[in-house]
Length: 454
Image (cartoon, rainbow, N blue to C red; front, side, top):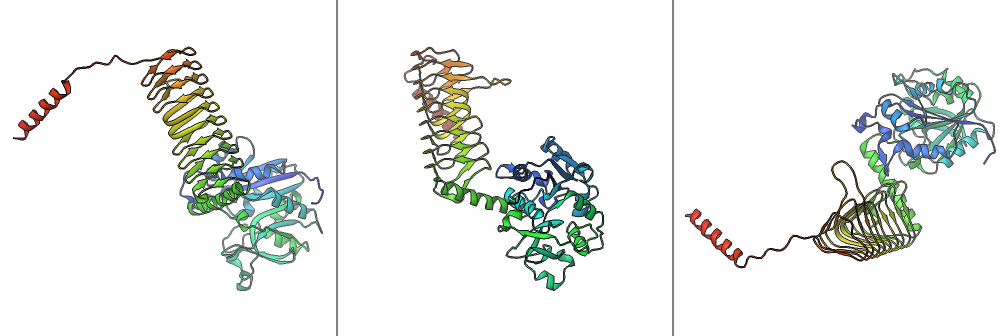
């Protein structure tokens, strides 16, 4: 890596209408692995600590302004007259800036920080080229622009629609991603024209203009064409998701997790999975999930925003919502939902239970059908249950309420007042017994039905 200390600015192009997505949501805000594709790109950019960030927007710029929340300057391209014209719109936002500029695309989210560094290193390397282009060699070049090169020296660049058959035979393609010094970039952009098949101002033309000036640009080639794959439709979004998931599953297994049916497990961008974790089929892990060593996630669970400690067992058919915190050795069974609640070490909620806004002590047993009644229609309230308590089946715990350590709540109770340590609380209506009543009822109903059938 070359040692250079030039300040860095990043221009991200996101002005396209994204018509092929058929969506009111801006294209670059569609999620991949639970995170907008633009945020994937910004996370990689952040590793390079840019001095300035500019997002060039057009259609849907209000959505981008809200999503970015001041993290980047918004430059507007209206009308859209090509990629070269789009980059020009960032010039005012970079007034007074003198350093390196990376030009990226909001719908190409997986360009890695290391690839960006390679481009900047080449910009300051041999012969200090005016422009560095990121190239790739796909299995099928399709309609990508081509790079004619000798080694890493670019001899010419051409868009597919303007290319000859000989040029189209070249396999080295242009990703559109570039690095240049700011002074070179905007001086070259000022000289591009639109005498081409589309009548647009093409960003790659700056390379050819520099070549005409006797200054050869350079190409850096990525080893992974998926890194520069653009996303323009729902189908391409699904394909990108599939590629990301496949790599993430492979990573999890390489790091010591067991996935029984890997193709059915879905991770999010920030999922953390420990060693000797077993994940059964058809599990969805939303954003914010941490699973510690030796945990087991059984089939058909949906988990998001949850912390799962070592030795915990979850599912099958469990739902953990944000704020669920399962401590060491606890157990959550089938058809249990937990939200914003701590399940203490060794505690159990084995089936058919809702625990929301609650704190359950260590060793506590939550019987089937138990619910914490945490919402009064206006506010949420908390339930606190002490260590080693026993909550009988089909109990309703009406928050705010505290149940002490070693207490027992009898099955079928609706508890609305605090229960002391070691206390038994039984809240049931008195049973009413009427011998023979059911037989008389059935006889009367059968007689009535028979008379009605005549």
